[in-house]
Length: 567
Image: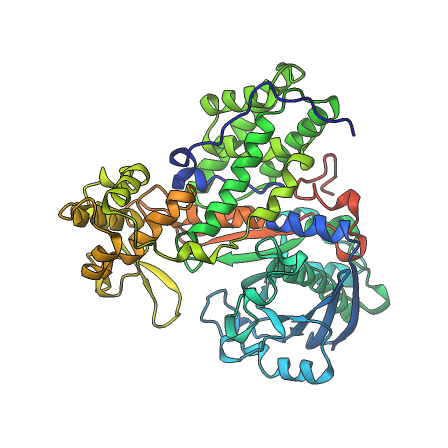
């Protein structure tokens, strides 16, 4: 590959005040730096192999299976338990007690004794316990109507109706994929030094990748059991369309607030990637063609994207209109002149809605893996010292940081009820974060520190009576209730994308914006809010399966193939 010409200018990163607004974060799309794509690139590049040493499931769909992913250095094994779940027991709620399938990702190859131990614990999820040899624990339920449609068709020797497949996008959806110490599983620190775990959430993404293969195999097994010699397997092009669904609620939303350094690293990597591409002086014909092809495939993907939620319906309507505008503009624009991507990006900032702007930002990265992909190594939080408060900092320095990074919060009248209408708390029943109405429910005494804007403003007020040269340590001895805000302010001072620059307890807060941001980094597609507080998504839709993963199909799989028939 020829070396790239030096850019005539270097694009700067977008300001946190522009990027870290909830409406924009809630418009993010998957991109080259999404965690699923980081994983599939690595698996193909390192030629991972996959085996299924056990598939012991009976005619009722009860039993267990083991799926192994063999890296150059070690093996990870998904241990899957299949259950015959009565319809009345099926629920997507966190407090459910039974599921159609339950899973654990085992570090190595499990013995019969390991599987027996897991069988006594994993099907019960929170009521069971695992050990440090397990890296994740998860569960999933069938999409009942589509499940029966697929089995009935295959058992009868026919393929399922692709139109029905596209309406749902998956045969099972997970209600949780737990890692990082949950239920006794290994802490992330135990595996963080492994190359395949260097990017965030790689173990969880591997779990889902293997679950998808299990689901395909299970539905084919059930069809064969019912139809006998008449049954047929899923056509590969239909199987590829099906991902794994996921139902995600408020439990995920506080993650963005509780991990400021990690979130900064995610956003900073994406913004750096965008800036690098905007700085490209000239685009080659191949790069332009790749962009145009994936834009067309994105338009198809968005046309297939369905939601019944009024907020998402409106966003999809605007996105479809603006993607057509973008397509017409790209056809007319000359992308072979100087700084084509910067000019296109600047045009979009004034002409397109937020959804389309962020969709374009993701698409622009696609031709430039050589510029972008290495940023995946910078997305984890490897600096535990950032959590430590610097008590030697002066009050004057701290107030300067607050005014520089939290000026937006100081412009809010926190005494107004609509500006503090909500409160985050942990449900005793579900042990999950919840969002309540402060003035209608008795929850204020249980509020979690998830309103950094309000708390930063309160910290600033408390500092006003202190001498500018006083050390922060002295202030915190007198006011320990402000420790969390001092820590956040010091983190944001060196991690500018660490803080959401919006009110997270206002009456008009949409928690689904927070969910969308995190899920986009996972690589999720087909966001379908079911309310302003929970959403269904699809993971690994259109991705290759383990047995056919290779360099040629490991990366652009989120974009549907043009010209495929729906018949």
